[in-house]
Length: 212
Ligand SMILES: [Zn+2]
Image 1 (tube, rainbow, N blue to C red):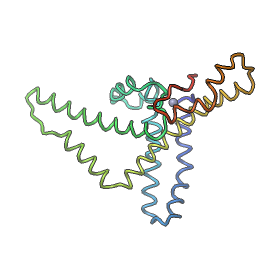
Image 2 (tube, rainbow, N blue to C red; image 1 turned 60 degrees about the vertical axis):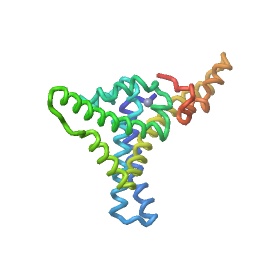
Image 3 (cartoon, helix red, strand yellow; image 1 turned 90 degrees about the vertical axis):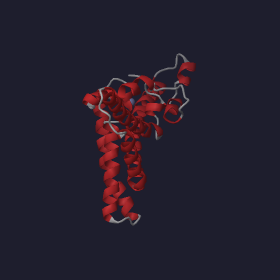
């Protein structure tokens, strides 16, 4: 799989390609210029945040964790629960949204835990976790275009990472199949190029890309 700097480069490079493409698509669809700028900006920012902060590689010890600083602990349960390089971290569409939902849930739980600790020490606090959760959900429900743009950017940011991992894995298999005589045909067939992509789409797949 590509290393973190390579993934970062791919994330930024794809966002630079996406920016004029999304803007021109929106303008072609006769979206007013100011709205097109806002939607393009939200998608591109979400794409970069997804690729560099909410990376699929949060499922293992990686440079991504260090980027979270003191909030690193938020991702520990995620790393413990999500199988390494499986659909639930490296799949398309669902896993990037899952990470966003997980982050939201952890923030609300942290606020709740702070309330419980404060009450234990005799400082009764209102239920901030409920009001914060409701405010955030209400805001996103009230701004569906921004919500969809954020979701789309998160999906594309995760997809660039997962597809790069898949291409490297599949590329190695392809070179192996083309240039290395198959001494163990059954094993090569099982790890063939098309089979290696099942983890991108199938949450129940036991096929995972190789680790390099
Ligand atoms: Zn990866």
